[in-house]
Amino acid sequence: MTVLNFSLTPEATARVYELLVCLAKFGESVAIEAKSDKLTITALNLSRTAYASFSLDARSFFISYDFHGSPGVKGGDRFTCQLLNKALQSVFKGRANDSRGRESTVERCDVHVQDQPDKTECRLIVKMLCRHGMTKTYRLTYEPTEVMHALFDRNAATQGWKISARVLREYVEYFGPKTEQLDLLAEEGKAIFTSFTEKIQDGKEVLKQPLETAVSIHTEDFEDFHMQESMHIVISVKDFKAIVTHAETLRGSISAHFSFPTRPLQFSYQNSGVHCEFTLMTTGDYRGASSTLNPNFISTRASSRQQSIAPPVAAPSRRTSEMPPPARPFGNKPLSSQSQRAPLKPRSNQAATEESDPDPESLFMPGGDGDQTWDPPNYEQEEEEEMLGWDASNEDPSASFHPTFRDSGTVPRAQKDRQPPTYGSQEGLEPTQRLSQLHGMFD
Image 1 (cartoon, helix red, strand yellow):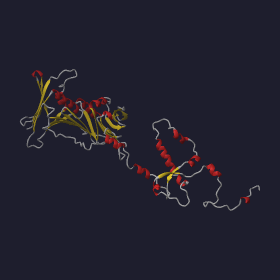
Image 2: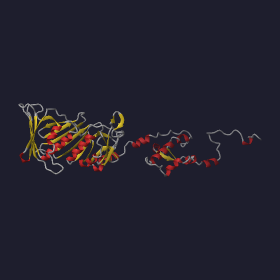
Image 3: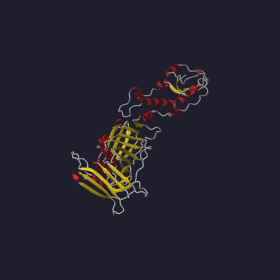
Image 4: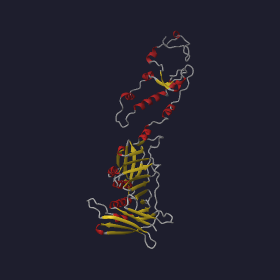
């Protein structure tokens, strides 16, 4: 035979009603699990995508707490049962101080379990001891059940944040009442909460609530923030509102622990002997957040911030390997010939474009040297420019592995036309006839 007896103060009685209202958002029934050190009340939705748990500490939450399990029975160190949430709410409703300042008439609440073999039905008996010697007794029928708990590994949840529940409650009021999904995103030093819906009306491709509400909270408003940038995690708006609303009643801070989309997310907070945990399944995508080997994190932690800003080590070696070394020149062919100069021109133009880095959102073209790109081509000026080439000389072997600025030795075209032609070149043929022997058509 199991013995479970505990007593509550008027404030603790009001806490029980508040947590029952929160659990009603997750399921119609609640499960109670009693142990020697705590009393746990849980709820699991029908789709098994959201789990809520409230653990009441035996020493700090109750006036008195007495539990004795059934010895010699499997699982006798705990007691589990299941009840309808509406039945419990009707018992604890209105036992707290109302908004008008009137005090509650309840002085103490006593609860004990009737689990005796000689009784036909199992009962959960609740007695409200009120003023002037009046006592209200409620007998609720329960059924034995096996409580299911959601497992969550805090070590695997490397990302998360922590913020005051009062601050977060102010932003939750902006979300629409008919929205379904909530998108969590970290971008540009802010946490963005976006509520939206995907429902259509009567098979038509028309959304019931096409409006999206986005709320941005700066990371400085969080007590702790560490989340990968451009990563979307989607949860239910209904569950999030229920969690934040109850967390605000405890006047504490709410923490979120998660790893990646499609992995569980857990909200937790505690105060006044109540430890609350909510485990939710998530959806979402990365949208390029995990495409890099070293993803950026928006974090208030100094170590993580320095790690995200540090450039990758392999970047300089990869840039050098993009340009293959030129072929070794043969004979008297100069290094600055047109065949070797062609692949280097696009390379220099691309480097100049990367250094300018214009504003993509600007309506105007950048000024300065960028205006020359719209001028007509001037081939004479291009011939006089210095070209970026490879130093293939054998004078300095170490210089052949690094790109250097090399003088091509070109001369302007006007001076080149005034120079007398050289007939001693080996590349052409010597003349076979004198100019005096040439005769025109009218000679």
